[in-house]
Image 1 (cartoon, rainbow, N blue to C red):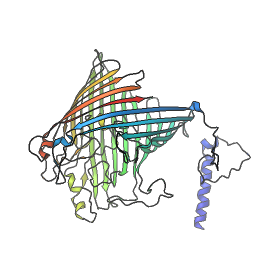
Image 2: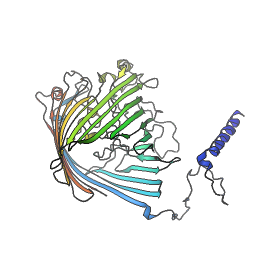
Image 3: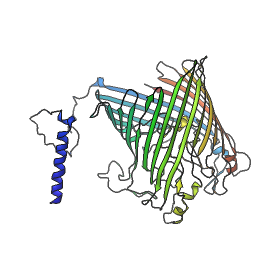
Image 4: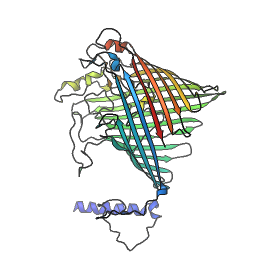
Length: 524
């Protein structure tokens, strides 16, 4: 009887709530002679195009004038010599011989189908074909598991319930500011995209409130073909019923020409299910990130000055009562960036710039590595009480810390100086020099993908933070009006520092690593 009473109570409450909402009270659905008692289960969507028994339906809803198609195609040959700097190195106490050179060609093509159902409702679908020439791809960088997949697939509804509120639901890109926490990562042959729900509320002509929820890992569903999503597969060291989510709030605004982007991010769970807690997005965490970005650009005399400051502090915990290893660590991590440049009012518009970056690392990070044997009780006891490794989430690191992709915003100090100029109105040239250091000597060096760079000598220790120096040069030429066709070529050299020399097994200095590419890009 109690259950029946609760059912009646909740049903009546819902009816009264909807009936008294002003937004709904103002709209009266016209009466028809059709049965309004349509079951909710069959489709749970308006049945404007019903299922067919034999002949497929012809839709009267489609209007070709409301459909636009966009596209991108890129082909990029790329080479790298002396990967791992041509020397065997230590990895977890073992000696790994790595002297390989590489040459490969990457290609992707995208088509975007945008259909405007009404001025306020948009349907967008963007499949992508991603391929390394000569390789039968089965797994790619974004977990889509094939060469053909959906890069974006969402609906966008403007003025949702209230004016100036736009909601986007589905697979989508999340790109902020200078891409340091969220970017599209288009340099990669797949890039980042996310499943979730985001919303933007325009508060004024100069301020917007952005909120979102992204599901980065679903551990209850084996796949879309399963009829129900109950249970899941137990991953070693990960709570099988704990999904991974990101929830964020951001308020970009322009205050007197100063762009401010205060940000809050909460990330639970983790998409990394490997055996190293040092890697990006460790499992079983609840991590809060607060901070943001500030940007200013203006004239000083006839020159143009620009400056950016961006920084974040992270707190929360890793492990806790649900951690299979018994770990429980508080999080205290940080990252900071500052850059400035001046564009001179002379031929080719040269810009001279400099920047500094730093991010915290974890002292003696090896001592709390995720166990391969969960029955070993000693691992949790070795974990520190505070974990200081910064989590950079989903950035486009290729544009920040050297084009050779040998550094991420984690356990690092970085300075760079650069020259950018326009030789012609249709071209761009860039020359940049970088110097890299470790922040914490007993944490690792992390590549641009935030993966563990296997140069840390875990047996013999480390007493130097000098990683090395990098010099990059890139030239871009645009061929058509509107920049629909572009050709770009670039190269870089990385001169190893003492850290790499000391972790090489073979005596003598490690050798210089070189890298280069050329690419042709067409978009419409």
